[in-house]
Image 1 (cartoon, rainbow, N blue to C red):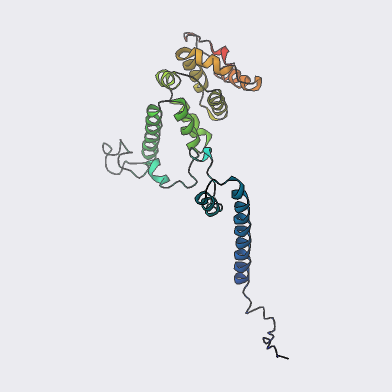
Image 2: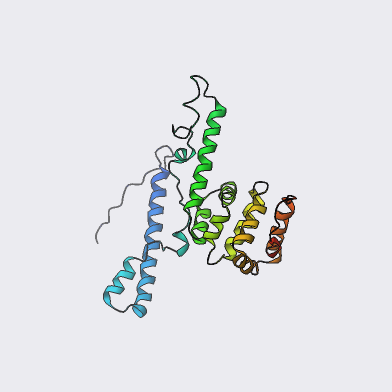
Length: 242
C-alpha cells in the first residue's frame, strides 16, 4: 500500500495572511467560469446558425467581446480630455483685452470676460457648423449640462433654423429643445426659438408638434407665458406648438 505524503499543516497567522492574493484568485476563477460559459453557449448557438466553419470559429472567438449598439456611436465620450483648453482661461488668444490693458491691470474681471467671450464664440461657431437636425441632436448629446445645451439653442437664429430643418423637424428633437429651454433657458430664449421656428419653417414645426403629448405642449405654453412678447414684436403662430 503506497504511503501518501501530506503537506505539513500550518497554523493560521493573521499577520502573514494576505487577503489580496485570495481575492485575486477568486476574481480569476470567476472570470474563468464566465468565459467558459460564454464559449459553451456560443458553440451551442453556432451549431444551428453558422453557415461555415469560419463563421463558427468567428462567433466562438468573439463571444466575449462587448457588443456595440447604434447609440454608442453618437454617445458622448466617457473621458473628456483637456477640459481646461476649452475654457480659454490660460490661452493668450482667449483674452482679447489683455494686450491693450496696461501692465498690472489684468484683473480677474478681465479674465472672466475673456473666458466668457471665448465660450460664446465657441458656441456660436458650433451652431454655425451644423447642417442638419441630426447634427444638432448629436451636438446636444455631447454637452454635459443643461446650461451648455441651452446656450447652444440660444445661438440658433432664423437662418440656422431654416438650414437645419429645411426638410423636416424631428418631433423628438423639438421635445428635447422645449425641455432644455424650460430647465435652463435664458429669459427670452424660448420665445425667440419658437418665433424662429414658426417664421422660417412653419410647416415642419406644425408637423412635428402633432406628435407632442399634451404635457409637452404645456411646456411650450409655459415658455411663451414666461417670456411675454413686446408691443412692436411681430406675433408668429407659436400656438401651433403650444
